[in-house]
Amino acid sequence: MKKLKNILNLQDDGFKKIMSYYDPKEYNKKNFNDFYIHGLSDDTYEIKMPLPPHRQSTHSIILVTKGYLIAGSGFDHYTVEQKGLIAIPAGQITSLMFMSGDIEGFYLHFSVKYLSQTAIDFLDWLIKPYIRFEDTEIKHLLVLLRRMQELNRSDADESILKSYLTTFLLEMKQSNDFRTRVNFTASEMITSEFKKLLNYYVTKHNSVRFYAEKLNVTTNHLNKSVKSTLAKPASALINEMLVLEAKVLMQKSHMSINEIAAEIGFEDISYFGRFFKKHTGSTPTDYRKLIDLSE
Image (cartoon, rainbow, N blue to C red):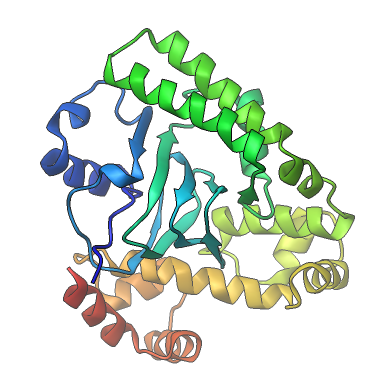
């Protein structure tokens, strides 16, 4: 069986823990948390799949040139194949279900503060983070990625690296696939804003009315917009986000199931157990055991 390779897409502590064993030189760089780029075929260690949901603190981009991977961004799962790219904004819950043994391409991340906000705004409102490029487009992007990797390895002037990253992001934005995706309908825009609000408020507010008021629309209009875009009601997205939040917290071994339930707004532990099992097929305790077995 071909080896599966880790994509190095964890929050800072988990990411740095892996890198400290894999590549101490990169780990010790002063700008490691601000910017990092890595060739997917360079990995020499293994990790068990799937990589559970986690909330990342950096913007990350994965470009595949050979093979494929299956990644989760928020509620959705994407199969990223040759000439495909997935862009995941900071604060998003993400996961990695599978990566083929012949994978090639690039992974890069950069902190929220690394570039001016105007250069990266589009990452925040991509409704669908998956982009597929044409042959000429992918060639231009690969030139920029390879140059960024060289500059990062040589500890070049940070301003030069930032210039290449900005150019790369603008090239992404100019691709035919991206430009067709930004002509969003009103319903898609409302759904996108609703998703962003869920990232911030779902553990404290789980009523559709709260989000409708935040968006200055009626609950009926919000539900219609979400159904039109995703073929499911707004309440379904709230429930899915609560489950994701619970899964992220269950990886923190110091938190009890009771504490996790309270953290995401469930006062009744029994109700939380029924809710979690209804949406995942496992009890919270059984799910945590699965995480322990995968380590």
